[in-house]
Length: 165
Image (cartoon, rainbow, N blue to C red):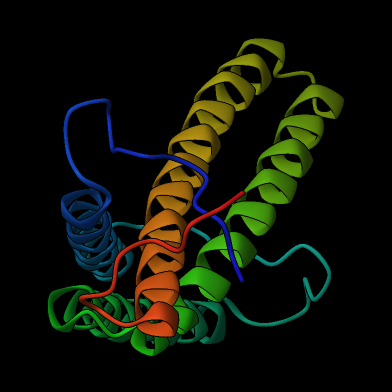
């Protein structure tokens, strides 16, 4: 049985409210990113498959962001309905995104350092690691709510905690 990692969100909110806030942030950031992809002239490229055309990379990124919106809505619905099974895709996606973000931040910072843009590399590393820490904390909050709901459904919603000797 999973155990909660945190007891509250930001030391003042419940993990339930924190999970809804995390889902809302994911949806808002996904929508903003989709808008930036289609309005700004940014050249996207992948780390391994750098031969893929820029338009294809944009389409793949938009599809991933739409899936993030869908999974975040599913997670928020699971929190409201107290169904931990609906939260599983977000928990899995969240940790994968955190690991991917960490790898991407480190790789991009190293590329900046190699190309001679030291200040840009340092700033990218600092802000990227801060974003990675915030994402990991949001994941911990959602995982804790998932663990609470899984425990609640296992022992019954209205039963007392079992007596431990």
